[in-house]
Length: 154
Image (tube, rainbow, N blue to C red; front, side, top):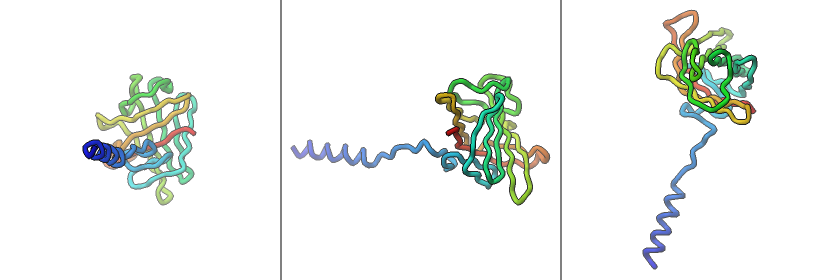
């Protein structure tokens, strides 16, 4: 009987010690509908789809644009390679606009190989997640910033 009670107590502690993963944040610690360009985090992001593009806009001045091969939005969930010019069905272009102190800068991701974004498609709605994708300033190629996102259509 002691062995049974000890085993039951161990199993209970094992389940109590396990923490359910939070699918509402990514590795960068961003909450729902947030993205980050460099050191600036944008919240209350609205994600929309128009003419084969996805666009994420924050009321505080930042935005992200996503373009897929042949400007066709994906129909299924997948992992997409971040590239400058998507020419395959598993590729995505990411452009970030960041407004800091009244100055807007545009960044393009995809110059560093091996970086990915997860696109989830559920009932025709999109969710995009990626962490620390390197993006280059479009006017100053020596400036690069990390871009992260955890955004979805509601």
